[in-house]
Image (cartoon, rainbow, N blue to C red; front, side, top):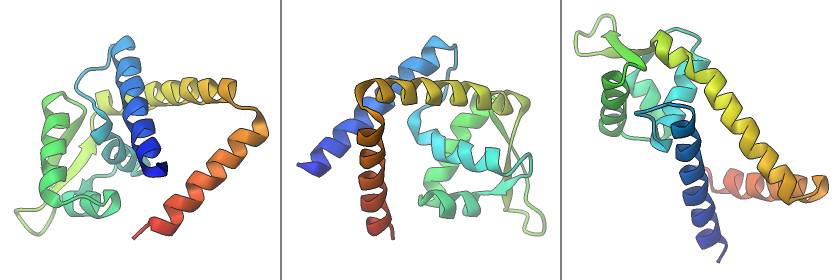
Length: 140
């Protein structure tokens, strides 16, 4: 039952995220892009290789390449040569991609506020603790 409820939480959270992105006029982003964009934002303007993105997001290079292509098509990232190996590609946020940070922060704050309205402080702390424990124990 816990896994089914967790899956429903992810589905509903993703739906709310997409609704919020649409309300704020953001197009071409879906929840699958979140980890990639997070890694690129943390890179602080430096390019990140496809292989590095795949490893840090626990995805295949093929999946990352497909997700990156969508982000390129919408102008959020660009691909650049990756150095010595002519096949290597580095991905970097464009200015449009960098402008997503305050949007993501706003949506995250709003969703946190909704959760805080549902639970009192100790309940929310306990929920976070339990979810963190499960996630940490099941991490590869």
